[in-house]
Length: 466
Image (cartoon, rainbow, N blue to C red; front, side, top):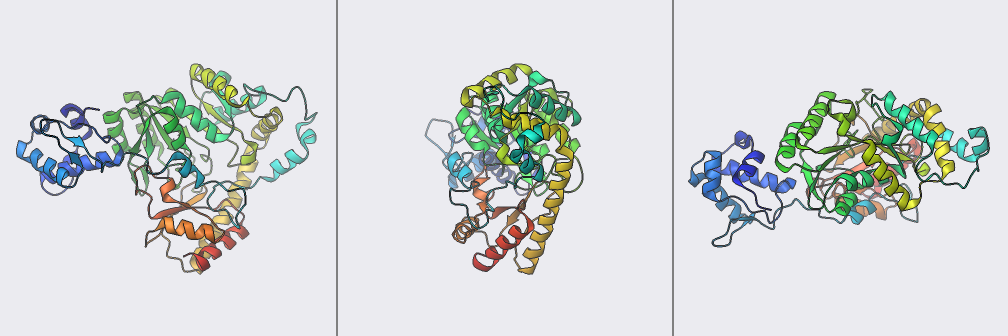
């Protein structure tokens, strides 16, 4: 990929907002772009003369910036050729997608307490429905051939009603029923990302998205984050410069528990529309609001017709139902619906019928129950961390089921290894990071489990690992 002076100038908008001499600010800005993935390894940068003219700088300033980048091995220079971004560029994934995903999965032998996966136990209504399916459904549980490859009509209608209640004017032909949110993410990303294109991801994000990015042939582009969440202003700049095919974001953010305001979400949608970028709004935990504030789906903002919205039953009811969905335009939905059917012939019809009734008749009360359980588990988690005198650092999450914990002495990988050996595995930050090092001193601690399990697991970590 050749980076022209005009293209680089677009990305370097407001690059002089730093401190220090101009050459230092310019060099730092180029490094930041390389680390985020906005500039790929091997990208050819403009000549010193061309960049100086475009940025209205003296050539000496650009020469000094390039020299510093060469000294630090960020640039590779061949006589007579434009400088290339060198091997230190970090816009590539350090772990394989499979390695990342393995960090959040429970093995065939369940541990003492599984803190590496953010999956809740079944809600009581799910237990009742699966143990008494005919009674729950009000009729025979086993009917027909057992298939609903293109989606059960009652479940589709329930999803449409659910989306409309959130403000999305959905139609049945715009809905794709999937095997949980994970398959929805995979179908959405591979459906809109192109080979050689870019998919923008928050700089730490849900590990399950990386396999989809790799399968599409696209590259990950890191969107900058602050302690309060996505930096929307900087994200809009990267959209303008890199023009990614898609931007995958999570509400509430997984793993940090932060959230965008509606104003910021609307700005992000507007920026995506201006660059032809499809936003994939993963709302699997979108209703798990711990601060009591509802976050509007991105599809409800101006330009939101191009947004793909993902949802599912796993975080409110139970992941074992394996029911998720995505909402998009009717044309793409039809394509993805048949792709899904070709993959697995759809989920079992009986589960889809049960899911339809759960969603249409039991969602609000089950969400209230789940939030009560989460708040109790979170309170116990904070209590036990305090009692144990652990020096873990974290911000109270606005939503979602996890704490994003910083270890003051770093070493999250070693901490994860020791935790697994003690029977209480955790997911280290490396599983979530787009830019290597972005989560190196963090681990995710879900608090979905019952209070007694949270207490046991944290005590083991305090006694044997911390």
